[in-house]
Length: 234
Ligand SMILES: [Zn+2]
Image 1 (cartoon, helix red, strand yellow):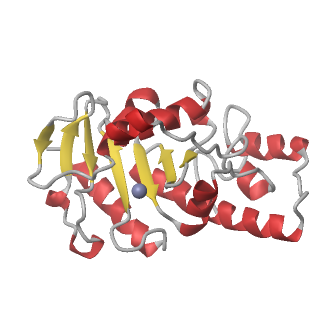
Image 2 (cartoon, protein in one colour; image 1 turned 120 degrees about the vertical axis):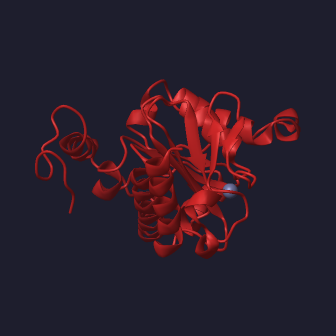
Image 3 (cartoon, protein in one colour; image 1 turned 180 degrees about the vertical axis):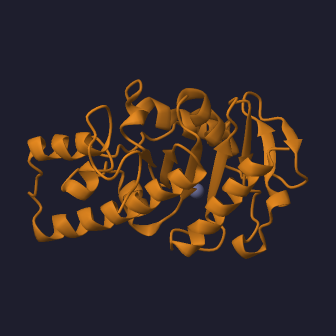
């Protein structure tokens, strides 16, 4: 079942250690099927170099019921399910503890938009979630983590802001499919690193807002003109 989606999700998971975003097993990628009923996710605690297509877990987005796979799904699965239910245009989700993005998450700070590398990627700062209260941590912790991500964005803003920092934890990123989400996670990590260095050099650095808007809209939306039609990148 879902052979092609499993291949995509396997390839995307294997791209995480290759791109330097994960250490040990700290990260996971999922993808959702085109009917938005089933999702495929990495099993919990399996080393990337041991990961095989049939280790991936298929489960129902609505209630988390496992429909295929013998291993336990990633412990972050409830957060992925919440995001798929709220963000109805996304096809893949990545969670990592990549160090530069995680440093901002641990500082509890949104990632400010300081240059065009960021403006090409997201329309505005990358938000950081609030602290969860004691009840949210005690009961359904991972689902509440997902809800805190949804709450920090305005309605439909997820389409222009492809990542959120979970306070004290790390980034969640999303894209049109599993590999698209990995690409966003790679960009986020670079943007987080550059922002840290920018503020070390000049704590008052700001990006001209007209440039920010121009950069985002030339790559995204109806007036996009960056790259070669219909879609490419460089
Ligand atoms: Zn984590």
